Length: 116
Length: 110
Image 1 (cartoon, helix red, strand yellow):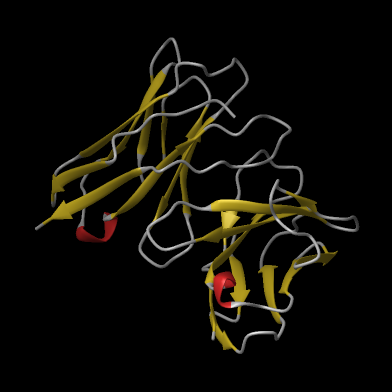
Image 2 (cartoon, rainbow over the protein chains, first blue to last red; image 1 turned 180 degrees about the vertical axis):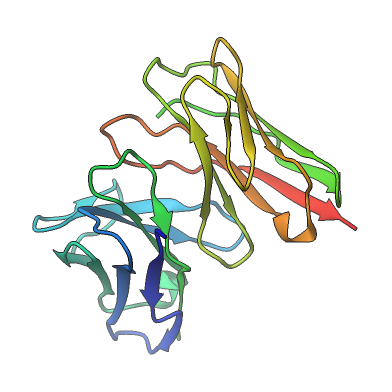
């Protein structure tokens, strides 16, 4: 149980294009999902908290217009990297917290983005 | 979130118990201790969590000191697949966020 999927697992795109990453909780509902970014040999950095049916809360320094988050249902959140640039190349990971059950978060397998 | 301190790296022989320490001297009364691990190029995996009492599941045991200022994650019979970075995290109740530190890089040696 508590499986989270991400799609795609890896994506290569040209500079200036937009990329959408999906995060799905497969066997539970998640009012809250989270998006993280991880650079090589670094720890995970929280980008934003996504709440179903409301606007996402972004961490300091994260541009909300560049990283668009939509949490339209209790099992799906999407992260769109708009006008991607090479410096946006990173490992993007989502997590989901089962509704009403403590603080435990379950993580997706991650999406590796390479912007050329 | 309360700050945690972990050793940057540890080694353990395959088949032996791996004991990973975590200091959290500023922990507050209602904060849980959570452990996650991240195997290379994968998303973090939940291991275990506890508040006061020691906890055990199919993956590991968590020993929390009586004053709750430190804890130890125990992998009873480490395998090569347990090589990963292990994170000790104290999410604030209600804040919902997990703040990842640098963790402990555990290497299991054959």
